Image (cartoon, rainbow, N blue to C red; front, side, top):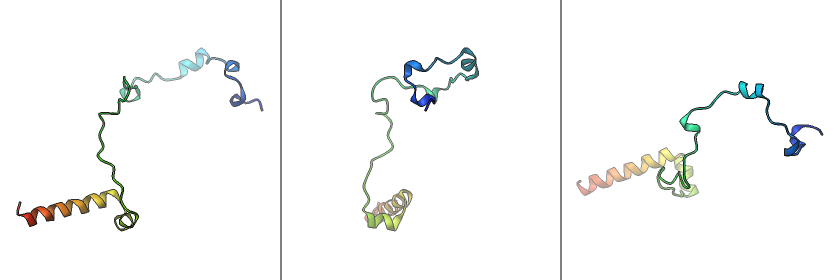
Length: 82
């Protein structure tokens, strides 16, 4: 077993200059780390809710659940005369 995965970090050599020249520079904003702790704190995808298994079996997807809830709200608004 003499492959690189079994060598200690001190036994591994640094990459050669030729290998470094072959690697492309990555200069895209999406690969950069955002500064500060909790940089995901302002990202909001909505609330997380738990759907009972028997209801999930009926709807089958988050989109179907959302569509049904929107219909319930629309019907409630119509019934209230809004």
